[in-house]
Length: 284
Ligand SMILES: Nc1ncnc2c1ncn2[C@@H]1O[C@H](COP(=O)(O)OP(=O)(O)OP(=O)(O)O)[C@@H](O)[C@H]1O
Image (tube, rainbow, N blue to C red; front, side):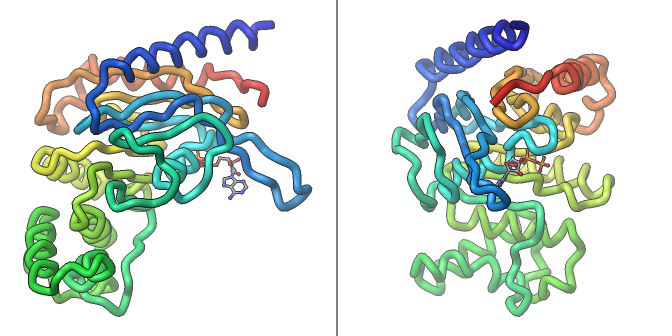
């Protein structure tokens, strides 16, 4: 019975997300009552990873998605990228239904996806080569983005000559150079040490401040989500994941590391932690 009540309360929150949607601009990502199922190889049975999730990433907004391990954060991001299908509901970006990967959405993954035999410059130009962009324009655009991500001077380096943080900068440059409207980031800093991660968070905000893309950022780290995001979408424990909460983060920008020590910041982190801890499993 309590599960039913909880589900009803969460449905009400989903309805709130739908109202947000009505107010949104045209360049937004709309995730509308989406479910994702997988067929498990072990027994060939259908497994409902995401049950019913609705939220929106407004135009130029930085939205973070957090939730317990295995709740379906990465699956949701892959579905938005058009890389895996949804089983019900609908997803659209800038008013167009998402059915496959398109150039308006670029993904940055946790692990480096660089081509080891290509230099930094050649890795960044790769996507433009695939798009048949003229060589000269491709080089100019790549140089601009390499400078933006702070790697000027490293154009001729190979991936193995770079630190983990620098490799993630190249991954970001590769995503940005094709000029997507929506940047999808799946725990991009998870493999970095704590210090580099903090530097990269600030760097990402600087870059985002200059480029102003819409961002959907998946992370395990609640403080990272609160530091980066305009909003934090909190998913419930899987399987059968729904939304537990959508937290507005109103700290002014530009943000610096100092806000992480403020009572307001710590209170938001606590609120999300409580939500994740208290989020009882919901039946699929
Ligand atoms: N291709 C797949 N086939 C079958 N099951 C899958 C597949 N991909 C994901 N799953 C299952 O779906 C659920 C959600 O996985 P997902 O990786 O999206 O969660 P997550 O929240 O990103 O996890 P984590 O935080 O641990 O990275 C998990 O139970 C996972 O085992």
